Length: 331
Image (tube, rainbow, N blue to C red; front, side):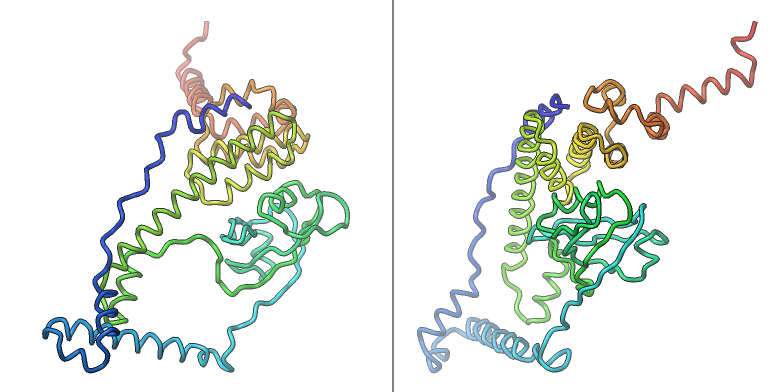
């Protein structure tokens, strides 16, 4: 498994350097000029500048009025409070999780018809507060994404979840689209360099997330090499919770599978291996020979799982079927 370390960093293109600083918007300069001249000083500005300054002042006033009016929305001047609920479900859970800005674990998607959906409790954006321990009746607080996913994947028996219902407010690192930014600016009456500013922020955030995923993966590989499989798992799971690219997801999932195999957690390992295959991991020779997956290969479910994704095996079966149909190879 440790051989996968060369796939991180060495064969990847270098991260882009920070982009050039964008020119400062002129709207701030207008505001400073108006403020320094006072109310009467606006008359001294050229006509075009007066209109621009008036637009900025008007937009600022409207934004302030909108902010003051917001508490009144929803009744009572308070946001809808989050609710806590408890639920117990069996595998397959039918839940997909992602890591939030606070490092917590949030529901990203719910599979229709699966166990979670049938409870009628879960909504996208709900936060995990506590889970069952891997064994027994103990309850573990959801301290971080990696640890929480470790508990959920390895749970033996029904899974207890204490959740916080957030009414669809997913606390992720989602980006504002250019269309959303333009619409917001149009509503405010001012068009400035805000679009480019948000695009730059989104780009920088995306690069920072990518660098963090790479660091987590490298740290996980070091911990794995030292035999600290549970600690390595937290790092690998953290990568998977940060919306990785498919190549990153396949490598991280494969390493999760190896870690669970070393811990002799067969079902969790097979689940992670399937995630790796779904993400595009195609080194079937490694999967069938990697000593770190030895415990998984002992399972009766191992070969059927691989045969669902190994095209060479599928094509060989198809070829044998054709030969049998036309009598090739018969004496």
